[in-house]
Length: 426
Image (cartoon, rainbow, N blue to C red):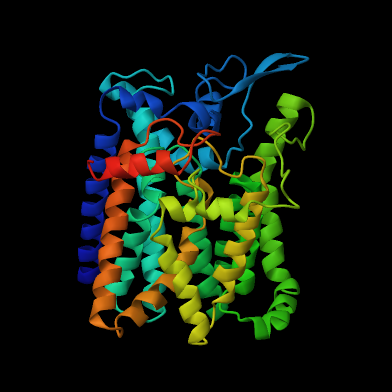
């Protein structure tokens, strides 16, 4: 067993090293300076503020933060919560320790700190994919499916971009947390012990901390393995599971305390809506079809391989497999939430970036789709395989080509097709 584990570990180490080379390609030359910049800087700024500057007074920034005037003077302010910084912190602290050993400044912005963010994204992405592989294996899918599905999730969706191009954004970290929550919910359904209660409660609290709208992830431990017929029973059992709620409330209190302290320090209020005038202006007329199919970052336009998971939900329903309700309900709810936001396209993004967080939900349905495909006619197998290969190629090429914003009032299908042709070197 130990030897098999070492072989598997060695393979993952090789994959990690390969990912470093991919990241290095995307950040060669001056591109490396774009890591701690814009939104990525806003998520990261907590780390240099706390560990280098000793507070939020006069913390230098480029364009990802702002200045908030307080009665004690100006403070560096970020509208983003500290959850991403918390997950980046182990890598940051290593960089902080080794920076002077290699002749770099301990300023939070030199090369070791930049690479700490890049390596954090790779590590969390790989752990997330490994957990999905474990989940599929424990659900008795074959070896081919257990490695094919995680590979497709990475290469065929914009998780690739938000791991290797914009590693400091929140999405790869949320992807990791959703993977943990999904796997832990599966194990908790088999053994509702303290361990699995904590391993569902803590990731969920972090998910809410990083992106409060992702609180709908509460449906994962609620609906895992459920169908509509037993939903009322499951809901009641979940509501009355006081041990789990105690763990979740404790996790929320512990993890949110530093954020509340920061808001109090900056604004004078423990609770503060940091997004100003931004809000859910389309709540009564959500742009759900736009979110899915618009040339402005439409999810299925830029990540067409995600459709395999959606087809898989239909396969699960047709085969009366347990668990189809979770991805169906949660993805519908997520699409509604995204379509209600004032900028439903979530600009400055490659594809609809918010769906990166929810990609783990597609793992099981996609596995059902592939399993069904294995018994389908040969022509269909070849057709789907060809589509998948092309989709992954296009995703990688478009991720490389993306510079600036592919959205706005003048961005339409003609612009998208121009980029698509460029992906094929035309």
